[in-house]
Image (cartoon, rainbow, N blue to C red):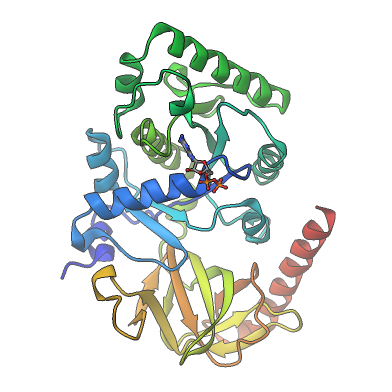
Length: 361
Ligand code: GDP
């Protein structure tokens, strides 16, 4: 079978950018992720879909297929990796070296409700971490009299709306532009923007009907390529660094870590240093586990051992002594025993930074 890593490796050495979806409760984070996941599964060729722990990878081919258009040669990223756990708490605790885990974000806002407290919180987090983002103006299908064209690009979807519906949508979008302006962001409907480095794009979507979702994916790919090229190029290979999403007890495996590897590679057998509530812990990766493909999920074991993973990737790490590992902290490969002391200090200062941030919120 064709390995996704190999298939995309030829294209370039850029790693997959990591995308988070943020926004107020009930504004549609889960629904959007379900839509994207569903698209990836339905449209993907079996060999190209990689299963992840805690994340969904949408290869570039799938995005192109869904959008019905082709990217030019300038697009070198292999696809997009969406973190499956929506919500900002996970996001704030996921930080590394003054940055954040996410390379890009989608700020989702119910277009009928506008800004709500968690929208504003999300926005301030994005501002603090300087994370490039797009705004998804969701639930446009709820505007009275809306005509649905399932999974259609926005322009096609807009064509069949009455003048009244288009006007309502425009008014609501301008309200969002106004809100964003209040918080220091220039924004406009994405198809009226020429310079995405200065203006935040607003993409009208419906996470339920899929309308506008092709546009959203296209914009994310474009943004990733534009903003992140330098950043991404640095992090394709070398000693792995990841963020611990969850510390989980698994039957037959003991305590395991669900990790988003955002930099470099993990090999089974690697020595790693892991953040805990006390002293950082040095241990050895016993096994790297990926979810079993859906077709095989009936068997007892839900996970498939792999020898190697490279960034960006969601993976379960099994190793001895993980009981005190801390969600939100870092797991890092130790390539040389001499590094342990320095890495340990670094990890502790990262944890202190996270602690201070959390206390301030
Ligand atoms: P979350 O809390 O941000 O994850 O929000 P959910 O994804 O759980 O969505 C909250 C509710 O809004 C659910 O009942 C969804 O079915 C509904 N919903 C989400 N997106 C849309 C949309 O685009 N259109 C409509 N009509 N309903 C939506």
